[in-house]
Amino acid sequence: MIDSRDRVLLVHIRFPDGFSGWILPGGGIEDGESHREALIRELIEETGVPEVFVGPALWSQTTRHPGMGGGRWDGQHNTTYLVPCHDFEPEPTMTPEELAAEHVAGVQWWSVAEIAAAATGVVKPDGLAGLIEKVLLHGAPEEPWDLGVVNSARMGT
Image (cartoon, rainbow, N blue to C red; front, side, top):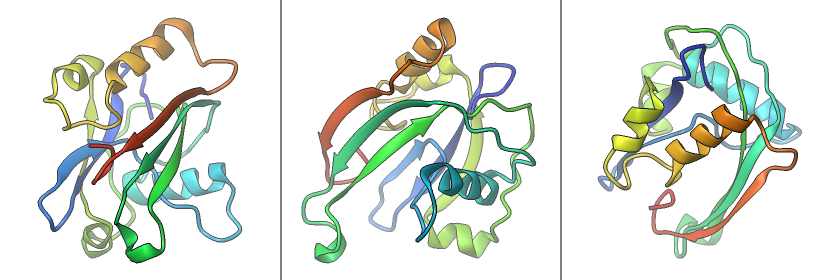
């Protein structure tokens, strides 16, 4: 999500093992949902945004989490979409307990400069500020950029 002031909405996640970082909002796809339907549902749950317009896909990346998921999964494939929006104050529709169960600790707007200045590993994916700057300067790509595969123990770190 990017607002009229070119700020990007990020979700603060905090896992019981101590990992803490900021990621783009989104989440898993439920049975029968398309990517776009899942994104709209997740944005409403995590941010309370009153209206959602999902634009084109910007990039995709696969993150491998060797040894995680108890054999049920070993990673995830993320597709990031352009979601332009009006300025609004995030108010998740999920309860604090539901957010905590999904390891969501907060939601906050960040400028591209703030993202660029964040310590390595604090904002994911790595290089997010440069990706956003590229979209702001040149618009969405005709085909989503493939950011490749990242091997990680946790969320692309």
